[in-house]
Amino acid sequence: MTARSFRRAATAIPAAAVALTVAACSNPGAAGGATGPKDSAVVGIAYEPESLSPLLGYGKDGNSKIFDGLLALDAGMKLTPALATALPRISDDGLTYTYTLRKGVTFSDGVPFTAKDVVYTYRTILDPKTNNASRTELDALKSVDAVGDGTVVFRLKYPYAPFAQRTVQAIAPEHVAGKQDVNTGAFSSKPIGTGPYVLTGWSKGEKLTFKANPTYWNGAPAVKKFTMAIIKDDDVRATRLRAGDLDGAILPPNLAAGFKDDKARKTWTAKTYDYRTVTLPTHHRVTGDTAVRRALDLAVDRRTMVDKILEGAGKPAYGPVPTDSPWFAKGTERRHDLAGAQKILDEAGWKSGPDGVRVKDGVRAAFPLWYLSGDKLRQDHALAYASDAKKAGIDITAQAGTWEVIEPRMKTDAVLAGGGSPGDPDFDQYLLLKSSLAGDGFNNMAWYADGTVDRALEDGRRTDDPALRRAAYDTIQRELVKNPGYTFLTHIDHLYVVNDAWDGLSTQTEPHDHGLASGPWWNIENWKPKNTGTTAK
Image (cartoon, rainbow, N blue to C red; front, side, top):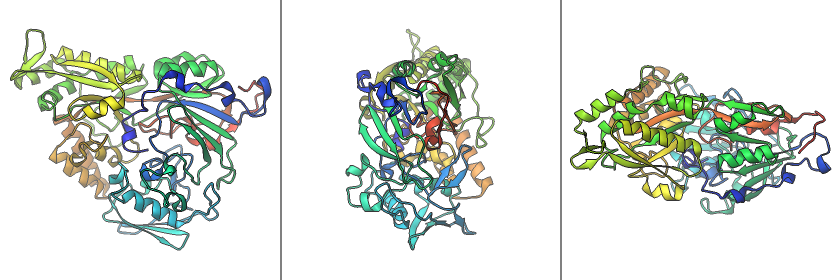
């Protein structure tokens, strides 16, 4: 997925557009509720990709279903070979990574996969003409070359500790994508890959349909048909799951709780790096004041948000790094301190006005906070944040809108955003905080600029020394206490309810981009139907 998709959900979609027939999730050949093994699945997700091209960002973190990377991440988030036969050979100076490729792999159109496809993919992503918002994640890459058909050599500009994790990047076929315009060609919606599934249809705003790749190098999947229904509204997903139109769905905690006594379904909880945060743009007269940002950081009651909004399925967030991550800087937790927030505002000259709203130099401490229409979790976070801010004398008006409405306003207006990427701290923090990326689509939405943070971001990605990297990311987290460009609210566990009809399900530690490449179906190619004798829907 693109960097943009880490922070945006699908465009608003009418509920009527998501209707799927029960037949779509029926066992092919099983008439009228006959019993038998389940070889198809339909799942409800909230987000829709903007493109299915790896060259534009799709599959950059793995689990793309249509494509494979050189490496993949297993259930424990450990790197394993995929299109490569083994983990890379790394030179002593950390600047050269050599991969030996798997033999006998073909794309779904029958054309052999070779090293030239890997070279083409990475070189195209790095081309400035390619509209890939995640290009800076490969900043360390100096060159990529093929040695025959079976070996690829990457050379780096500087030792980049997490480079191997970046080679889960999905690989595109040069013989197809290379003949089209990278940004506008049909490959973006009609992709061909080496993955376990082949796309059979994409009804924008409604569903993506897949069939098993019978020639998949790791064995044809037992689930022969797979559909991802794009259902933006949480309540509609829950209703369709209960009605039997869906085999599984991602749901917010309050709706997932409604299935806890359902013997035919199982709830899966995935730990995540997914955070909800409020952008505080520096180009606004109120949110551009560091004192206001610091006050809001203390005024917000994160624990109550976790308890009341998430019903305990998550934890307070003080930055992009979850508190249970080994990269979290201990001591950067912020307690709920309304008196402290009020004191900061008083000392900065924000005085209480006749209506209780603070004023400074004729400017009222008031601003809008946008959240995505139909996203109840974002709405609840926005309303709770506004309520907490009001107690400190800051008037926030929560407003719903589509991304088409919100995006043009992001330079000056606050947004209830989401983000988060597991793995290395560079993956999310650089795009979120680097000053040079301000205004670059959904990167650095707060237009945050802090020289100390900029230097630490570069220090963290330009060395493979663990101690130096630890110091860099500790510096970033401590600087965010002094100069917060965002108010981080919660890290959210993802909850999925799935029919208990298959074996082999599991979850990974997930990014913000949940439901598409994540969820218990991250490894659907490994599912096996249970022969329970129950009626298949």
